[in-house]
Length: 236
Image (cartoon, rainbow, N blue to C red):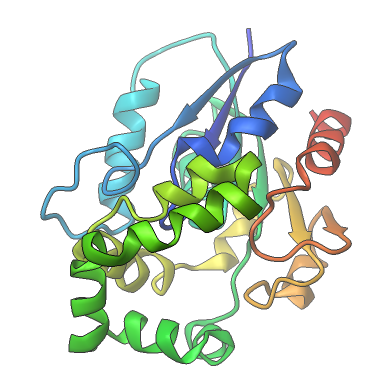
């Protein structure tokens, strides 16, 4: 029996797919939490592709023989990792759906970031301080999540469940080191799903693959779960 696996992105958690997963009640599904984020452990590792893939391979038993084929649904950095898993384990991965990917090259992505995000990605001391002292101020945002983001409140709360090391290292050693060109190695298995307002996605590159664009969606897919599930079900 095939199984759908959800892989979240940077600063995310398995709760990011709480409502999308509900669209697949007729399927076997599982949301995976990445090392360094959400409720997972946050060790002092490099947080490069190999670190993430090692953890995912163990959780999904990808190094063992199995008749179970996996359908991967990744968001943002999770899409990047889903792609790498499919390249490493072509016999186990049946299909991959990549939401909010592929990214522009590093220099272009940095230009699209806000001032704070650019400084955070570069690792300035004051952005590190803000991240490390988030326990002092994060409660200020919680009323906003409950009042205006209630449906996805747990996902927004989970954005704080990381360390500076896990987040900054993942940006530096995984996202900025990505090679989107290796999508061609698995082009028969991939479907790209992007928001027309997403400033980090290379839409020109996406045209070479089977791709869908969702009107009104940015990099975060919350609120567009039904549209995304319809695309996925049509292509499984």
